[in-house]
Length: 275
Length: 213
Image (cartoon, rainbow over all chains, first blue to last red; front, top):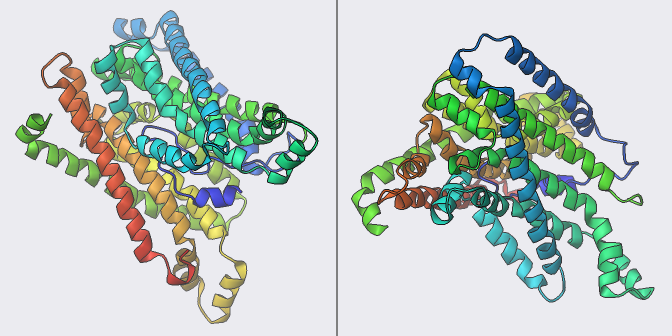
């Protein structure tokens, strides 16, 4: 499955971290039996993140900073920015799930089935909009607030979850659905007890893609006064202070890698036992 | 908005040209790098999971963060933008090129050898043409992504339509702020869709007849 999906061109998130192989499914072995690539990502990634963060923290504690740099890199401020960044990501993820999963379910029901290619097409084309343009335009229309940033991020990350929900539900063996109906389950029963559990691995891959996309795009939230770690990068460039700039960039990158890793772990934990 | 465009026709056209130029050059370089790496990776199989993991990790790093890391190294300006766009453009192509080259039936490679082709000829006349549709799909993904990253890269004075977006942001409250950001954003969308259509056409023209769907 992963092979054919990789060949399918998808219009992608113009801003950040897209996946050409969004809908890859892991091999059907035990939950923790993983392929080479996943093993590297699951085991090596947290070590790399921890090492780099440790090195940065050591540098921060010992470096000789001037007063501007020291103020921008105060621990309290940095923790605030990290928290803002995480909050933006999590709130936007919540809304993405709230919109994309029900929509994906609706678009695989017989009544709306025919609209599915159209909806995905529109979402794909919309993804060609640059993240920075979307967030700036929305802020001009709705104000420079946390809410605007969340709205822009949500719009931006709906696509991967929507697409994977549809792909996951469509990929289910129809005989299983029929068997469910045959043993007397209602339509909703089949959906919640057969279709959704079977589609969980594919949906979760989409959720992880969305999470990574959101962490990355949230760096741009600073342009609409919504904070986040992008603030350090912008301050670093504006004040021409490389230590601030690099600290910001490094922390965002580490956060993104960590979120990706958490997503991968979540993917394995959420997978129902039978598959 | 039309008035805004009319007054700045030349400037907008120049930004659009620079945007496309940056993206196409970066994608071109990225394609060469990615295909060469993919050939190496498919030759030494144990490298494959490493390449895929690096590709996945690379795509995870936010583009704004990479720009931040590049500025101290290559300075503010076009160079940072070019390096960042090329970096991100390489990863999806690399992934697809590896998959594409591996998807080539080993028997075909063997028959090519049997016909007397050497390794290089097998690569250029059998393996790459057969992998090309998959590689091209990667190029399309990369190009779309690069259009957006190039827009972000305007913050470190990269060329292109992103400058209009940041100008709008800087002049917030001014008469033309919204127009500027709108033109920049829509310009990127239109160009991205147009280039995607051209790449689709390129596929029609360059995918070997025998494997055309």
